Length: 297
Image (cartoon, rainbow, N blue to C red; front, side):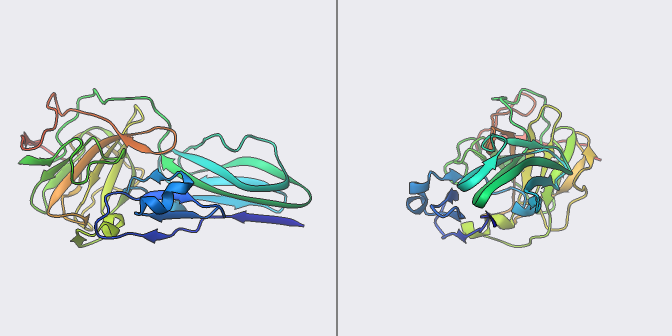
C-alpha cells in the first residue's frame, strides 16, 4: 500500500503591529505563516517577501506509478525547493533537496519514487520567482519609474517598512493616485496583481497590494507596488520597453497613503532579496525630489 501526502496547509495569523511575516514548517510537516517570531523560531523560519505570486502558481502532480511532476504556470522561471518531512520504505532516485529550476509555463518530471512494501512519503515545497543570481547591485541605467516630479518618502533601510531582505533596498515615492507608473527598464511582465482596492495600516492587508513585477535579461526583477485597482495596461508574459506605461499609482494594501513602492530584486536560491540601485546616477535618499520620465508609451 502506498501512502503519499503533500503538506501545503497555509495558515495566516497577522496582527496590527507586525513588521515581518515568517514562514515555517512544523514537526508535522505543515507549512505555516505568522507574524509571531517566537512561535516560528523553533522551526527555523524564513522571513517572507509579501509581494509574491499565489502559492498555487506552482503545482505538484503525482501519478500511480510514483512519478512526481512540477508545473510552473507563471511567465517567468521559478526556483522550487522540496523538503522531505517523512520517508519510510521509500526510495527516491534523485537528491530532492537541491533547488529545482522550472522554465515558464512548463511541467517537468522530477523523480520516480519506489515503495518497498508499505511506504510513507510526506514532503512540503515552496518556490520563489526567478533563477538564482549573485548580482549584488544593479549598475544598469534605470529610469525613474513614473511621470512627474515627486519626493522620496522612504529610502534604503527605511525604519517603517524597509527592513526585510525583499525590500531593504527599496524606495517609496509619495504621489497622487493615478500617476503614470512606467517601466524603469525593458523586460517581460513576470507576474502582477491588479484586482484589490482599498488600503489600511494593518499588516494583514499586505497580500492585498496590487503590483507589477518585470523580469529582465540579466535575471534581476523590478517591482512596482501599491498600484491602483484595475489600472494595469500590461499582462503577464508581455514584453515591455523602458518607459512603457505599466499601470497607475495607487494606495492599495498595507499603506499609509498614496505612493509607489519600487525595488530591484534577485533570487538568492531560496527567496527574493532586494539589491541596491541608482536611477541614472542618483542614489535614492529620503527627502530627495526625483524628476520622472517626461515621455511614456
